[in-house]
Image (cartoon, rainbow, N blue to C red; front, top):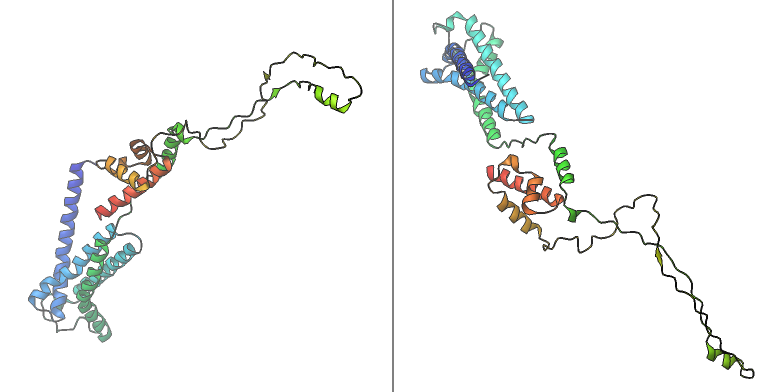
Length: 294
């Protein structure tokens, strides 16, 4: 529906409600005269009953949970009370000409007592219930609307845009090298001391061609998981910041951002921090904005 159609619909609704209030105002004014109200009080009596109905309707649209249930009960009670008084006004013709005795709304005494009690208690109930509803509306804080798919999209962006410094580097496996054992030369002095009576011929070590070590490719059945600490080369040269410093930088960077743009990914890119810190900063900034609005 376009804007013109909405305006016409609201105008028609206001007109219908106004005419219905005028019809009910006539009946409630005569009821007020019958229970002893003066001319001014009888004129204001319909606003006490039907006015509280309008207030309870507005509170129903604003409140939630148990407070909304309470507002619905007040709306239903005063609607039923107004209906009963209008019904009595139609059954007793004497009320139209103000010829009925004070305090006499029905011929049967128990019914008359109940109707008089109902008519006289509605103004007092309007004071109590109206004040309670206004207090509940003023202290009501609406819950922020969060799209259901926000967490899934945010997690996808974090995984796809994760920086290299946040990823752990896997430790390489040691490369096996085949080495050739070299013969140990025989010490000449040891032989002379062990057998001094016999001449000992000096034994020269046989030269053996040295074999250079060869690198053999390591065999791996499956890739190993990322273990160990991140090497210093992969770490960011920027010094580590405290949570308060991060919050100050995020608050300055997002000062002119709207609430819809205040996401963890945007904060992470703005202050260059980890996804975990970005989510913490997002919740802190949203809480500060909610307190400022309240």
